Image 1 (cartoon, one colour):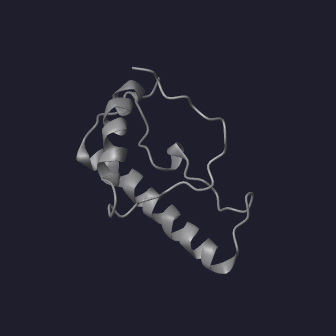
Image 2: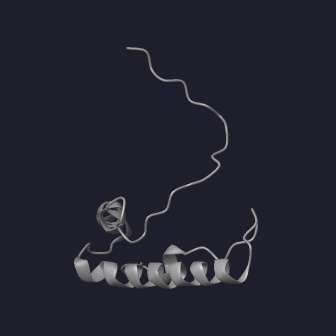
Length: 93
């Protein structure tokens, strides 16, 4: 079977579904974090994801408020969520 050709065109839109209406966003976030956190020396547990989810929600609210105040252009967006704001510190080393 022939492989589909990939286009190099830019996407006109990217769907975001942070409230689990269309996709299981929580699982899409937690599964990679469960694999990545141990590499950082952080135990992967439900309570470990609480700060991540709280930071994600704060940024989602800020993004929505930003859109309400401004017509967003291609370079006009609020600050992005950074991992350091959401992850617990790993072991000292």
